[in-house]
Image 1 (cartoon, rainbow, N blue to C red):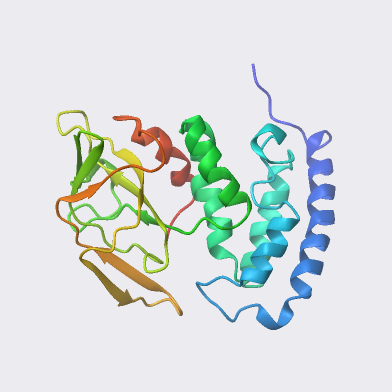
Image 2: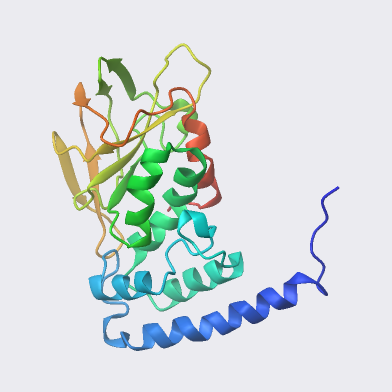
Length: 244
């Protein structure tokens, strides 16, 4: 039977490691003090590169996956300091928490080889294709469909509130691949579509959302063959991180 670590076992060590790491993070961000808070939803390439060079993007993962077995406490500390100091690295850190674990657990070896190095280097630019006009963010009620046609997927539907989509190279897309199956989304990585996109300035400072109005959009996956009917597994990690 599994037991939780007690306050006299692992917790003190995690606290010490976390606070020691906090000092390290603050020292790095301090060297970029003139850039903190200036780009609300953007990236400072030099700062992101500095974070990546220290191996902090995905560092809680095992060594064989490119990490260094850092503690969850250290990941929390990095996210806390980045948020508190408004460090312009939100997309690089978001790729770690929103995409990295799902790719590591549920994607093919080719997809891991393609995407995990991009995440570790802070170079994966993406947006989330979840919300729809009739479903909101209820993923079990999605209406956007993807139908296989040879080597292509024909995507038919509409996505809303894809923040940062005007800059993204990849769309992390939730669709329905089997209309006869119980409600659960399929899941695909596709190159970001430019057809029939409409941009809106969002309420958050510096934020731009992109509404995708694609109908019968044909895409050939460049990231390996998706697993049909198992998209909810690839999205399970997202439910731990509320999106606003």
